[in-house]
Image 1: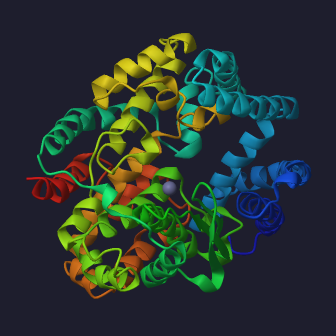
Image 2: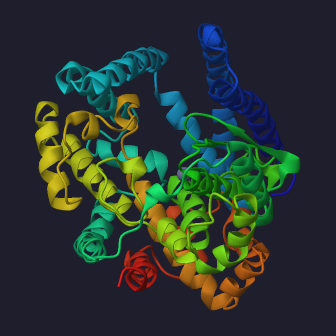
Amino acid sequence: MRNNKNYTDLLEALQNTYWLRSTLGLLGWDEQVNLPPGSAEHRGGQNAFLADLHHREFTRPEIGEWLDALEQERDSLTEDQRTVVTWTRRDYDRARKLPSEFVKRKTVHRSRSYHLWASSRKANDFAAYAPALETTIELAREEASLLGWEKNPYDYHVDRHDAGMTAARIEELFGKLRGPMVELTGTILSSPKKADLSIFKGFDVGRQEAFLRTVIARLGFDFNRGRLDRSIHPFCGGDGADTRMTTRFHPDNPLDAIFSSIHETGHGLYSQGLPVEERSNPLGQAVGMTVHESQSRLWENQVGRSRGFWTYFEPLLRQAFSSELSAISSEELYLAINAVHLNPIRVDSDEVTYNLHILLRFELEKALFDGNLAVRDLPAEWNRLSQEIVGLTPENDAQGVLQDIHWSGGAFGYFPSYCLGNMMAAQLWYTVLEDLPNLEKNFTEGDFQPLLQWLRAKIHRHGRRYDTDQMVKHSTGKPLAPDSLLRYLKERYLPLYQ
Ligand code: ZN
């Protein structure tokens, strides 16, 4: 049905909540990029007021009535209208079913838990943080129950980040990945060939930024409706109407800025490729974390670490840093770009060992929610499994169980999507290579448009028309599987480390 009053009213309400939500997003960006330290409380007040206003706008009873009516006449709706109704119903019910008393309790605890986590990590004192983590898990269970997932609370948290994904499905995928992944890592690490990351010294930050802006624009990011700024932790926020990316610079580690920026550019290109005129409703929004990460990882790894990419960009990098790079050969540079080394810290890990860190976290999250693991036993279990999966035991809890911010904020079920995103990226890579066999040659000429246009057509323009699994099938013709990731890592790393 083309002219449906309920539907146009619904879209108008979604437009209004979108203005509030995108303004909140902008305030969040500003908090990380610009906010003077003494203004944090002021910003907290602005955030809380706007978030409450957004919640009230989005949970208005009329929205439920329009959804009810539209669901009654579902057969007469267009495909796109059905997409909007289905996903809005999911988001609306989730917002309605959480009593404001619960939301407040959770918000208060999250802030307390974050500060306890940060101070415990600094002091390497897990016991000081453990009671807060226990409460966070109880709240996560309570939230799942309130939404009708009391029997499988972990599935609810997985589904929050990747609609349709379940713990059992992840277990199946990770189960197939684990053995070969551990073996491959061992093979690469046993090579006498080692990348040397200490070769980079004194790279002027201004020139790093100028180089990066050239790279990002060349990949296809539209600076006319997006920005690149600096923050402590790189991120990409906003949407296709106004995309906000950040990065950070270290004079002795130029690769960090390059790869974290290409990663965020992958997110940014996805945002800019979603139908911008539909950005207030599900037709113009991202599918979920796995698909988002597949985009950032594809650009960062399959593209950014390829020979083709560096054939084009190495001369430009050498132009910008002629004396700093004069003693470094092309092979040394390329090996550093593709360095593999065991690191207890997930965020400092390379694209091979990173996956092992995710397998470890998934096992622990699952056990915490199954009731098979008590919080007090978590550090010992972390260390035991870390040795078994990652291949090392962290020196202390600060470098082990306390390293990630995620659990302190109750973000359970989030970690798996990093590895699922890697799987999807590799699967996309082999699919696009079949469609566009000259891709690497395009890269050597600095032409990334064919890849970008392919991703636009296969993924970006579809918004939330598919859930995670459906999107993988739609874009690659096959269900999500670990085979492509293993094949890609072998093809990239084994020749390099032979
Ligand atoms: Zn990312």
